[in-house]
Length: 84
Image (cartoon, rainbow, N blue to C red; front, top):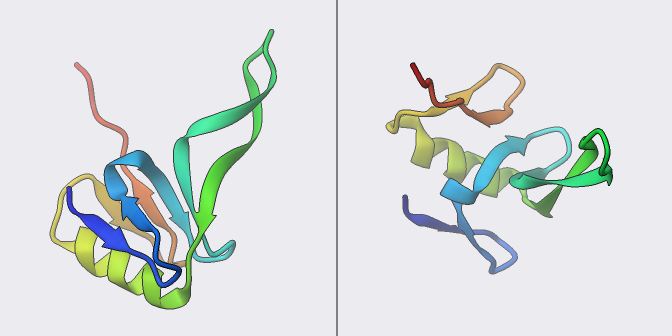
């Protein structure tokens, strides 16, 4: 997947992103912060700040690609791969 240049100059590889929050204005990566190693409990994920314009560019980029969903709230979510 191609890289998206954010307004802050960071290049964002969408294959490393699990979802983009319109509310938090952040793109979150797959790797969570593990707060309890015994239960693998997570409380937050690593992410980078994004602007409204970044979110619009990302939404346009993933609109024609499979594997992504833009929900009514403006959140952009990577769909889980189905394994049979």
